Image (cartoon, rainbow, N blue to C red; front, side):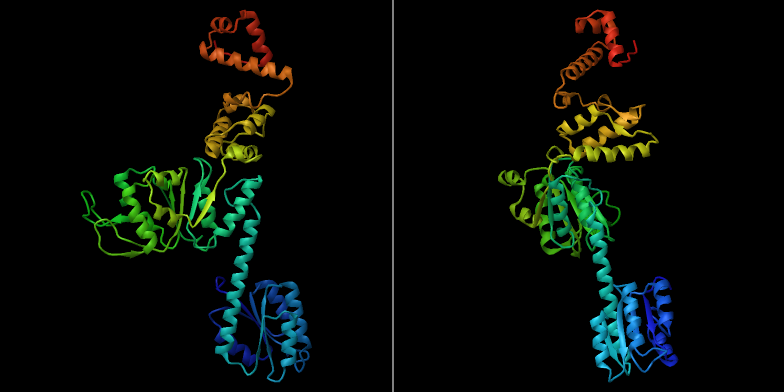
Length: 451
């Protein structure tokens, strides 16, 4: 019962109450006889649609009580679609009601078929408005899975919001680790296909001889080992979104078959002759330069045009000013909770390193570094050493000469220890200092050595 749409009928005539309740039994119908009952029902059931007889007690001969009820309903629930029901000669009050915010009006005597059509349209409009509001609320915050504060990513997020509700094929371009699949899922999540499958295939991760059957499926007996009919990933994505990752690695021999699918929206399983229609939204991604592949005759130009109706260029992490430390902090919280650690922050040196490092592996590399640091540290703070970003020491080096010297000496000592397998004598010899001086430096910089 509760899953049905709620329709509130405000009518004081018992005969009409029964007739309307029976007529609209496909809805969860709630009956109210006066303004007090109507407002109580409104608060309890929150109906999307209300039919309101303007002639209500205590003065059913006039529309004043009905209009007051309308005003109170719209003050409490402005999005409610109120259909006012008036007498045959009461058009003036009907017009006033619409001016006050009523969705529509209907004049007695009641034709239930016509009134049902008006009510059905009111529910449809209400659902569209709710969906639009939900989308606005969802996209007023960062997109699902996307942590971004820089202007470039905010602009990209707005572009994703525009792309998502359409059926256009999108091509996501970016270096490895920039979050292409996360963005593809965000597009799917903001589309009208959000409750249908999201199916992803990585062209670079599947051997060429298996990729065709993975995409298109096969019939029983199509080849040795094909013991039963098997659907491909494209077919599994029917009504949903199909994400083809690393499409630049798609074998040239398969590109024509994919192109035919994109043109016809039908597939044929390997060994089959039946054309199977598939309704999917296509999103592709690659870290490769497709134009260069086209020039080298490794990628079809006509396929490129098909998959790039809208192209989204994803900036690498090094070009996202301020995002690295923001994302790292989010990872720190996540992995601290996941591994039951009480790590609260990054040290100043660690934060400088995160912001200064070029992150060639982008967000994937950052995630891996933070996860490892959280697992390995025994402290409540992630330090520079925990991150193991040795090549960032120059980039994050402070300007203060004392701090520069301390950072350089610490790094030199640790490198010498590693090179000499923690042998103190050999480490001292590599550094050109005596053993007592080396022990003094260990104490000064808090370096612990297992000899």
